[in-house]
Image (cartoon, rainbow, N blue to C red; front, top):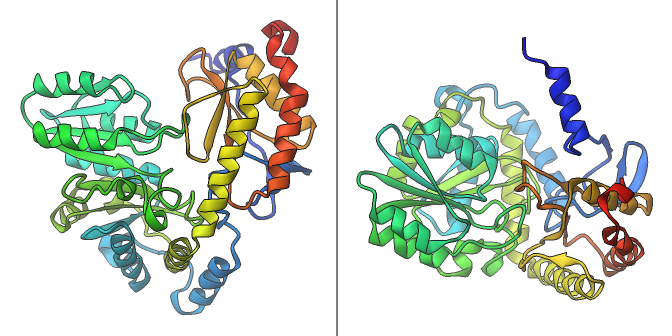
Length: 392
């Protein structure tokens, strides 16, 4: 029998062991974690909508008429009017023909990728794509070719050397680096090589583009340029679930073929209506994005001045590169001792030797919150000057 205890001990010795926190109360910058009040800089609630009263009201107002549970899959009797309303709203929000509502972003990527490619086909995936994309590629049983991160020359060579059905998949905003994929070049390459392009814009929707419509709309890329758009609703949108949007023909195909859509219970209808309310807020409240961008710009300027190594990101995801696993953990612990929650990200989530603190900002953070973070980072800067053995 496999020695599970030994494997866990190995993870502990390598600084890779993970534990869960128990959060009390709603998601917001001021959290209670394991009974301790902390100021959080590690949530994906980029617009501060997860605890917005209008969204809460929309959910509670819906439940007397919708009930709560989805009760069945969409193809049995679970496809509620509320789900249909949200899909129409998502298609309009993303300026696409049609949309499907999935239970999670992970299930959306798994279902869409494995439905659109299979044995005998080839999938091309950026090396820094999210685990759900990687797993969707593996589930498809297609040949998988991974190209160097955002390296369009490498991808072009791979595409030119490949025959048959080709699918290219990428994150829009990369979740651990915060950078944005070269989407215009990707779209042009896929047109030139007759490849189907899939973009997961989980971390761009709500934050980038006009009225928060995402990284594709920021660049003016249409459904013809990028046929398949995947997005999650538990990040900037502040609710739960995910969606895929694109041509009606492909959405019909996914209803027939996407196993993670077909064989799962539909999400609670009240969540769908709460998400509609959130999309209304996202469209009309540009001030949230403006405040968020101000926080990001000031953080980059001040943290760089303190001597921290930042990655090239203009999104709310602002990684501080550390390298060593134990040094990243020590910096995270030192910040927590000062009342701040900033997660250390270690392999296999990021490549070996690239452990980091992933600072994420929310429009719900105040300028004083940012000042508190910067002050704590100034206090802790000396930790990264010590050998890793001294910071454990």
